[in-house]
Length: 565
Image (tube, rainbow, N blue to C red):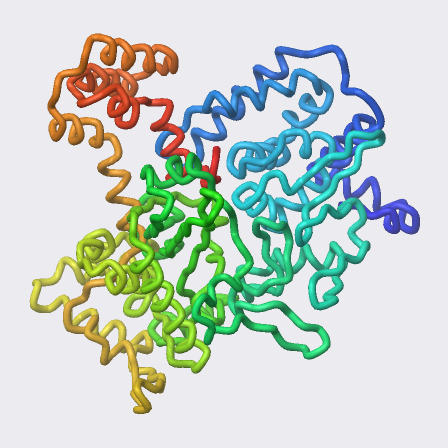
């Protein structure tokens, strides 16, 4: 936080900053210890007391994360934390600073990143956290950070398939199309991606020249993007690959076992709070396409507004107005490890998959022509997910996972008070009252688009939403999955009421004993295990009863959203 220039030219400021900002002093102390560690072996005097305290604080931190259903540390997380034994001085100083230790927990537990990177390079790890790169690395490719084996240790990060040093923020990096940026500029782009999408993204090849909103590479010579050619039949193969999944990773992420030729599509929803608020909630699509190597190429697409509101005035201006939209690849929410997530996966045929991609391509062409619109209640991301899947799968069953009355949502603040007031009115008055409220908020504002060569005037006021008051709410999908998660054991048991062999029953008990969880909730789950002895097979018991697997599922779908936690 304090640069060498400031320290050299303004020495009087140096102690004042440290006294005014104690976290800066703690960060500098950690970096000083880390510099010593980079030059030689770690301290050889382990301190179990420090490690136990770190684990206790990690448990408390995880329990405080409201987006998690199960907040116990997993066995893998505990093993990672026990590595602190080798670095007693570092973690004694880390524990003393609440902001720094919480940053460490976010790095290690929430974002699923490498333990040693934070210990040897805390300054860079904190910079990656502030730049929203920590979650990207943990989700897309945690191996993108590499520490040199030689001394002193150096840190490298994956950039378009090759590793580049990251110690100097002024150092230039060259991307495709001879696009050159310093690390400082790169960090700033990722910090502001939530507002403008930026010209960089993080995927399987690391940091790449790619705009998720423009679907193209920035060309500094033309001062424009080299966009993907949507006229190609297999246009999606021109997209940079987000990630490659193995068969076991596919099964872990989607709880399905597709055949080598089968595709998987998943409706995914995230929410920032464990209620039915339509603020901080989003829906998008994930698509896994099999390749010739027995793996699946992973893509995700989401509908977003072309311009993101940067302040309250802009937000209010967009609230009841249809604004230009596009399809983002990848969707930003896949990196939101701080949100709760739910998903519904479908195994589909290649024909259905190509039809789904054709629908996405048509929407991209509409967006390019300015005929694709977004509005939080009427033409939102969840509606797009539903309609896209409906076209490809020829089913309307997904609607119930998103569709609900606006007045039954749990909005906060002023809007929540207004909704509650209208909900208390007689049924016949509610829709007219909502209509008047939306008119006051700007629902009469119009947007002109073209459909089939005909100009159409669109507005929220003329939308069929004004007649029924129902919305597609992404948070509802997560809410329904959370509500039924603990019931899954019982429902599945009664649907497959068959007697297991004694060996299979004993295997269920062994799985439970191996995990050894305690508490009232766990006792309830023990009852599920006893009932599980009536399941059809030991594999069935493992799938629907194993608490160890259950936590992995919950950790992935309801908070710690890495591909392999």
